[in-house]
Each structure stands twice: as structure tokens, then as C-alpha cells.
Amino acid sequence: MINNNKAYSIFFNALLIFLVLACLVPFWLLIASSFTSETSLVQNGYSMFPREFSLGAYEYLWNARGSIGRAYLMSVIIAAIGVTANVVMTILFAYPLSRSDLPGRNVFSLILFIPMLFNGGLVPTYLVYTNIINVKDSIWGMIIPYLLLNPFLVIMMRTYFTSSVPNEVIEAAKIDGATETQALVRIVIPMSKPIIATVSLMTLISYWNNWTNGIYFLTTRTDLYGIQNYLNDVMNKAAFLQSHVTGNISAADIPSTSVRMAIAVIAVIPLLVAYPFFQKYFVKGITLGSVKG
Image: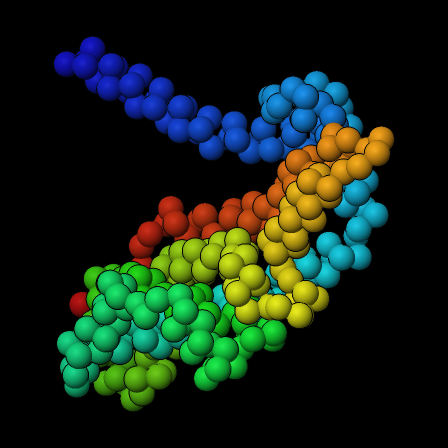
């Protein structure tokens, strides 16, 4: 029996080590590539350690710090507005659905569930956002389409409210004179920090990594590009230059891969900084309150 426990322990520890390496190795390869010269990347490909160390990619970023800084700032603004709006709307949608006395609860749940299975398609959706909601070439084109409300996150939060927030606490608050809004703000939300943190982080990742909205809805306002759209723009320009090289200039002389890696490195930094602040709520996983008998 003891030998079996040791075998299981060794197996799962080895599995966890493998999974950790599977996460860390690509990130390390990304960093190493950003410090490798473009010539070495073109001739030798990627490697775990720079074969020819170079700061050329970061020198390019420093020279383009104005454009990159603006894209970074736009990503921060878009993510801040989007995450705040998404979390507020998710809470306001999920909390009523968690109440068993809500009139038409099943109908609203069905309305929420249908978009998870069906959608109108890309072209009709684009026409609705541009012709009716009119988000084209505005900052709202980076915030509203596809990201503002996620039915899956609403279902997650509704399930948490139903299973982890005792109904007796809410009823006790109402007996003491609290309204439904006061019960939500003063009782439910403080007891739901783990799920709110989870939804916030998932939404933050979605907004920060999104680049399709910029392609679809920003045709002239490139000044509204976030860092991901800026990265895509750099890639497109480098590909164009490499396909039109002439004279003594070779494709290896045009910074492309190393610059792309360097931008990816600085783009992922905010997520790495934000994650530790949310992690404690993931591992905590319990409500911040109790029912007194």
C-alpha cells in the first residue's frame, strides 16, 4: 500500500513538472528569441539560448516608443473600461437569475443560453455593430463587440451565487430592512470575491489579447490600436518589406521575428503582474461569511 502511494506520488509529481515545463519553456523561448539577432533567427531558427545575442529588437521598440506607448495606453484603457463594464453587467444579470422567486426566470435563462449555441454569423453581426450600434472607428468598437457580455461567465457567476451564497443570509438582510440592491451590494458581492476575481481575470485576458475587433471595426482610426493590433501591424509591414526587398538589402536585415517576440514579451507583462493579485481568490474558493444559527 505504501509503495502504491509512493508510485502515485512520483507519477503525479512528474506529471506536474511536465505541465509546468510545458508552460515555461515556450515563454522562455519567446524571451530568448527576443534577445537573438534577426540574422541568427533567419539562418538558424529558434533556440533556447541566443546563438547571437542582440538588443536590436528592443532598440527598435525604444525608437518606436511613442507608437508603442500609445498602443499600450489604449490597451490599458480598453481593458479597464471593458472589464469594469463586463463584471458589472455579469453581476446584474447573474444575481436575478440566481433568485428562485424571479418571474420568468426560465425564459431569461433560455435567452441567455441560446447565444452560446447559435449566432447570426460574421457578416450580419458586423452590419449590426457598424450600421445600428455605430461602433466603427471608435473606441467602443474595441470594447462592445463580442466581449462586453459573455453568457458562459454569467452562468458561472449565477451558479456561484446559487451554491455558495446562503439564501438565509440574504433573507436575514431583508428582514432587517435591506432592499434587493442593498443585499446584493453589501452581502452578496463581498461574499463572492473569488468568482468576481475569476471573471475579472478571464475578461482581462480576453480584452488584452483581442486583436480581431481592431481589424474589423478600425479602418481609419489606427490611433485606437491596442498593443495586439500594433503587433499585427508590425508583422504585416515587415512581411511586406521582406517580400519587396531589392538591391543589397536581404530579408535578414529587416527586423521582423525578433521584434515580434520583443513586443510579445512586453505585451504579456501586465498579465503576469496582475495574476498574483487574483491568485489568492482562486485558491481560497470559499464564501466570506457564514450563517448564524
